[in-house]
Length: 454
Image 1: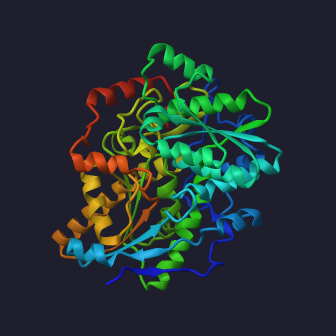
Image 2: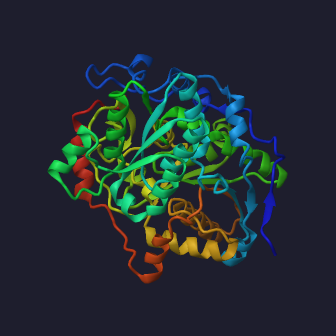
Image 3: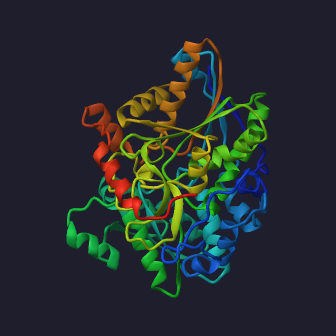
């Protein structure tokens, strides 16, 4: 029996973004100026972001209109489909109903263009000619390269070195859309040269790549910086996913008991879950799960406090779960989840008990990915394999409790550029990595000198 698919009409993409900040009982703590310890104002972000995005970053408006030029480009692939995973349900032998929102139909093959197009548009409107950014696994870098090509802009991407080497076709994809991609740490910036001087063989990290991209933007008149996750405006743009999913779940005559998303910086999880979190805050019973790697357990073992968003300490201090801004994660295949921090809004929801967090090893995640692919036909990217494992854990829990659950998760991208990871899994070369407690303790020492939340 084929898996059932639920499609919205071609004009079913929302005409606004949903801002969860408007519905929080209490706002998260503000970003701070690292020099003064005082909350930052818009002027602190003006050197690297256009004012329209800064306005969205600090907005308390519930609904923010999506400009028509952005919706016109999103219409190339949106609305994306929702599937009832009936084949996978039978394979798992469960009475649970499992649904997934599939974001792999975008040009870049992931959810990332939802914000890349918006950010490129607002930069172009303010006369910006060039955007600098970082990327982990290459999903974000390819998405922004695509978006910049739509508006005739240049794009410079600093790609974490371990992924630059292991995912060459992501680099090729960026170049196809006109993006310029270099391995980070690089010789192109002071931040990169400083890292290489200490460790010429550095595998890199998102924190290092962010430092390079921010420096690039801050030292050129024609350039602004763009971030693919973490900040409020990025999470805001992704809520088209969850808004569509709510309409599609209604078409399926269902509503989730459990909503699951993988979490690295937070944009994927937020995009699907925030429109549902609004219902939970209004009193609806629901479990929301952030699934992260055990090798980079930001939410499950990191400390909630203030930290820098990058290794070189050039950003404002953000209130978030963190493993320390100098943390260098193990080179696992889920490059998009290898970030030392987490979106302040997601961290706030975990800290206040609205969202639960779980951590998983990559081999157990790929085991579920293969079972899913053989049932549903889609090969998942390494990042959402963590969501798959969280779904199966919920299925196992429901079986023990003798109940049936309706579970919704975000399949945020396909893995067709990531087959080397599957090759490692099948060959037995894939290994698991458990972050030692001494590294967690070292992170706590790094954070001890920074302001505390509250």
